[in-house]
Each structure stands twice: as structure tokens, then as C-alpha cells.
Length: 464
Image 1 (cartoon, rainbow, N blue to C red):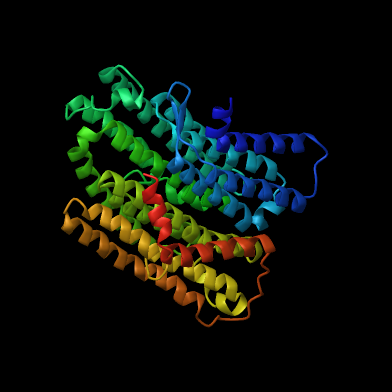
Image 2 (tube, rainbow, N blue to C red):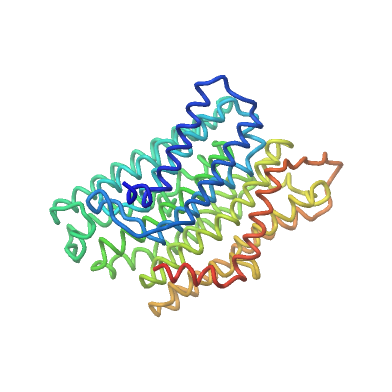
């Protein structure tokens, strides 16, 4: 019994928080400020438990695996959800269905926890569905906006298509191997046409979840139509969990197909970076801008996935940690501006430094990190991804990826230039709530410190 409690501490903690929220909903209720503070405290406890007290073991007949690395990855996801609860306090406090939002969010997080620890295709598929279905409901929480309903519908359709493709790939794997267990399947899949087809179906399902080109068409519309809290969750938490699961699938099920999936990853990563960057150049809507920015960032994650096994795990895990701080700093500022000033466009950021210097600096540091400008942690994150991709000696590929970093500098710095330019007229000052300020401080400190403190990356490598 103790073994189950120890290995599933993160899953049980999230489940307990969900039940607490349901009991509160059934009761007389409480003030939104008090309720939000309580939820944030519970999420902070979840972060502490996820990062600490991690042991290695297998339960449920080997279907569920937990180790120090899995605990660290779950900690990253828990930290991202905690930061989202802080940064989007403006919107959450004003929403009458805050408990329902957190129940859905934590249900999706629970599915992502199981996804990280799954070592069997059955629990892997069920986890992915649990991580996807609540997000579609979350996308429709802006009930007064038609775009929110459209975003939810597109999310449902894309998730259903990805789920069908994934199931077909799993059925092919079961047909050729006779098992759904990762350890049994390992080594049985060769460069055979049927095995390659199974891989293509599985990878396509992941490509939908990660918004890899050409499976990215739903992303910008869903990001624009959803509440900012949902967009931040999709951009950071969902992509992080799927990235962790992807390299498990690639190296545990398809090691003998490395030459095949390496070529596919190289082509798709370059296309994803190129199209993400060039579409981001054209955007004025902030959420669509961040959507195509996140697509370009996924291209860099794929660069890291093209490397050797240990380099892939350490570089991708470190980059997701940095990405959490960088992207959520930007989303936090967008959430405040959208809630208080109704600003939804890049042009509306002009002169932000005059009205709110803390928001201007937080946004700029986040964008510097996303662009990969030193000494921000994003530079080191992309450097490790490029080093992982370069381990195969494909230097023309790494050169093209690095050139895409230069392209991204233009549209990130364009936003920063507007933020520090002179405003056209008088603008009202923006009030920053204490939870939002705390979230921005954590993100900014994470961006500035996680890059220069080398033991973080060394710690990740030591867990492999």
C-alpha cells in the first residue's frame, strides 16, 4: 500500500484537490478571492510534492512506471499550472465557473501525469484522452464570445481525428507484436512497410497535439478563441506533456526505425520552424502571434528529438522548463492587459512601459528568452537542443535551424520596440494584483536564473 502511495503521490494529490473543489461546489461556497487563494495554495503543495520525495518503481503489472525523471517532469507540469493560476487571477476571479475550470484543468493534468508514467499502450491511450477531452470543454468557457464556441468545436474535431489516427496505429502495433507492453514491443518493430505505417500513424497523432506542420491548422483559431488561461495551458502544459511522451514512444517502441523517423523529424522540424516564424511575422492579434510563436518553438523541440537518447531527454526536459517560464511570462502580461484594458493586439502594446513598467519588463524578458537572446535561459535551452541535434553530424540541418532563430528575432524584437516606444495618447495605468505580480516575479527569476545556474541541467542529466 505504501508503494502505491509513494509512486502515485502526484496523481493522488491532484485527485484529492479535485474532490476538495467538488465538495466546496456542493457547499455554500465562498468568496472568489478566498477560493482562488485556497486553490493556489493547494496547487503550490502539489508542486512541492511533485518535485520531492521521488522513488523508482513499477506498479499495475508494470503499466505504471515512476522514477526521479518522471517526478521532475510532473513537477514542471505542476509548476506551470500553479503559475497559470497566479498569472490569470484577473480572469479567474471574475468568472462564475472558476471551480469547474480548475476541475477540468486538474483532470487534464491528471491525464498528463499518467501519460508521463505510462509504460503500456492501453494506459497511454487512456491517459492521452483524459488529458485532451477536458481541454476542449475549457476552450468554451468564454460563453459570451462566439469565437470561444468555435475554438471548442475545432478542438473537439482535431482531438477526435488525432485519437482515431492514434488508435489505428496502436492496432497495427498490436497486430505485428501481439502485445501492448512497451518492454515486449521493444525490438520487434523493424523497417518493414507495415511497421513504418504504424509509426506514421502514431507520430501523426502526436503531431496534431504538438501543432507540428502540417497538422497545425487548428492552433491559431483555438488560441484566439479560448480564454487566455486555456491558451496558456494548451501552449505550455499540454505541449510539455506530449513532448515528454513523444520521446518515450520513439525510443521505447521504435529504436530500430531510427533512420526512418530521423528523416521525418528533420523535414517536419524545418517546416514547422519556417512556417511558424513567417506566419508570426504577419500577426497583429497577440494570441495568434503567440500561437505561431509556439509552433516555431515546437520545431526546435523536434530538433532536440533528432539527437541521441540521453541528449534528447535532458535537452527537451530542460527546454520545457525554460519554456514554462518564458511563455507564461508573455501570457501573464497578455491576460492582465486583456482583462483590464481590453488590449488584444500587438499595436495596442505601444507605450506599455509608460503605463506599467513591470508588465513591460516581464513581457520583454519573456520574449527575449523565446527568441534565444543571452543571458536569458531560452538561449541555453535552444543551444542544448541544437547540440542534441548536432550529435548526428548533420550540420546543414543545424545551420538551417539556427538561421530560423535569426528570423524569429525580428518579430520578437518588433513587439519589444513597441512596448518601449512613445504612446500616441494618454493611457490608463494597469493594476497588477498580488498573485499576478508573484507569478511574473517567478517567471522572470526563472528566465534569468535557470540559464546561468548550470546545476539544473546537470541535475536533469544525472536523473537519466
